[in-house]
Structure formats: C-alpha cells, structure tokens
Length: 135
Image (cartoon, rainbow, N blue to C red; front, side, top):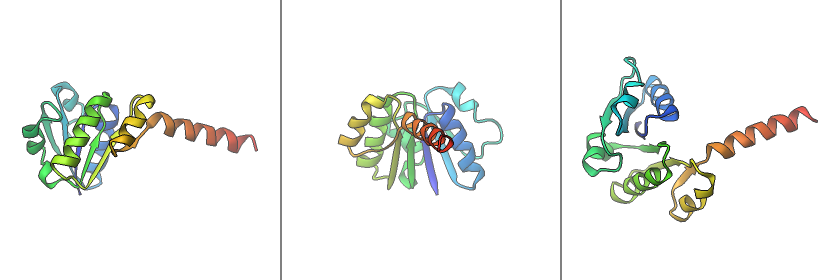
C-alpha cells in the first residue's frame, strides 16, 4: 500500500514508522522540517516539507498513487482541508482524518470525511476497562 501521512506529530511519527516497518510505502508531509527529523534515520519512506494541502507538495508526496491519506495534524481545519483535497481533487480511495476537537466531529460528518476521534477512543477504552473490573 502507498500511504501518505499528513502531519508528523506524535501520532503521525509513530504511525509512519510502524507502517514503513510493516513494508508499506509511506510518505510524510509536514511544514516543519524539525518534525520530519523526528522520524529518525531508520525511516524508509519519503518526507516532504511544505504546506500540507498544497497541490505541488501533495504531488511530490505521491498522492497520484496513494491508496490512503491519513490526516493526523493537530489542526482540525488543516485535516479537513487536506482530506477534501485528497478526496475530491485527487480521488484518493481511502481518506481518514484525526479529529482533535470533539466539537468539530459534526463538520467531518457533514463533509463526509471518515474521522477518528482519539478522545472518544480513549474514553471508550477506559470506560470498558472500568466496567469490566467492576463486574
């Protein structure tokens, strides 16, 4: 699979390394070179520094052959914008975005962007653990 990860924060960095180690072709885009350096020397993929939703930057990242685009930036507006560009302009088959502010979940839904909400996931895991232990 060819996977583009937008945003090289904590999630993007870990995901990029894990997917690359699993044998996937991974390209990571971030506007900050320092964040891209966090991937380390063992990262086999491509790094692209630039504005994450820029047409040319996305082309450099290989969006024309991408099977997945994961928008994992810390800014919901950036994740929404790049997801719409990937989905509607480049027809990337699978686009998944991280929701940072749970109050913006409805925006992703209205725009038909598949979204993962880490706050909800962690809450679910913790509630499930508590419920299992109290039975």
